[in-house]
Figure 1 (cartoon, rainbow, N blue to C red):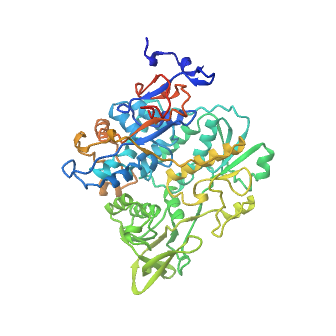
Figure 2: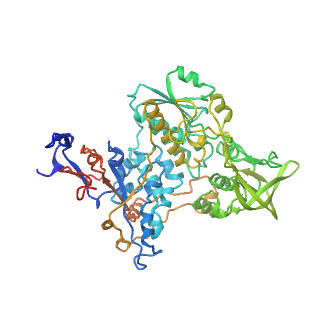
Figure 3: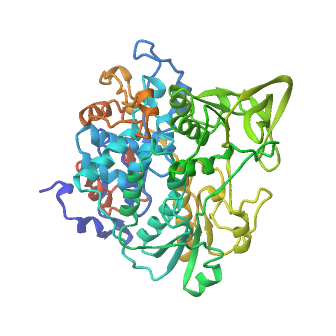
Length: 592
């Protein structure tokens, strides 16, 4: 056969001598952009970094082309620089597994998802969905693709089918690494380091794994059996776990070093609940969010009365308010200093809370908790004109005189953030900033002591589970660079615009009604702690996946490509990449 794609792989690995005696590659890959799924598999596998993502421009000039707003060319060009893959902190390429689902290839979708995600069924339920915010179908036409739900259903299918098996890690690097904390950040760091071949031990202070998944995430969002099952599969064979171990005190860093640990990833989280320093915070019936959620999750009796006020406007606050309604409260109200447009809770989180009856009082700050015989009975509020931040980033509301109110409350719960264990951090010897957080080098991810790296809530700003997992991945890569004596450079992910002949015209897309995800009714939801989001029928999910506009595809930089054929071999679609005569990027058609 004369077709280069039929040649054996060893032919592509051979470098030939040119006329001047220089070495040159024997073959180059050709990408069929019409077939490319943009799953990121070849991009991650390429040994030279020669593969990048391109995004097609979507024409929105004509109002008759599709429903939705029209766009000027400069706006269409700006939109081309965005993608669902760039939005995912963990490195998913959602377009890839959606297109595999659309063709009915569930196994292929599972392999694409599980290649980058140790907790797919967990994130398939509680991910903050930044990818869906960037889905151009939702921005321009109707609704975003249900990327999170698709991940959940694929993960559940893989578990039922027996494809989700315990991971096997080969310890082929004779270096020991300690990971402190078994929340999502620590779990991800441990799995990534074990995948690289290190001898990893996961130290957990508590008698059980899970961190905040175990302590604070309500089961109506994430059933306990789901994340426990995934932890067992993710840790698999090769990651040792030690319980009752508080790294920094027992064992100390010196003890770890004596035992041969060459690096430590600290992912101990922010385990201390917070209350605002206002009068009445210590009355009976006043809790911090962690204490309240911990009591509920552990089945300890807790009386909330009929009216609950939750101080805070973030994701935890919405979880707390919804939980309060499930344990007997008749009313639950969120009070936050931000206006409704600036609340840190995501819009869909607020929508879900409101659907279950949670009320919101925005732009108000609590002044004091009122009581009767030391039992909370209300919260005095003042209106907020604006919110500023001090030099440490703390929020400082400016109050409006004469704009206050009093809310009756049998229970008051503060959901205003969590604190790190500063005592242990100081005992370790880390430098802390004015807010008591460890000082971290942004480039390397390193703490102030050599060989110590931090991740998750310990470094702040990692409030969502997917961001915490991504920080664990960055810490693992930084630890690997340290142990291998390399300088790790954080590469900014970006996409390039595709040639204009690849432009997408919405009028040519298949006309499909967006899938409506099923969930319990408010009455059903509030009657128990059952999972609110219901399974999606497989056929409906595959049909809806066809709404993906296939905005992206991959391109090869032939100046960097060595012609090894790895991209062709790992492609899950099988017929996207073929090997042909060698080329350089500046040659006609050399971009792909």
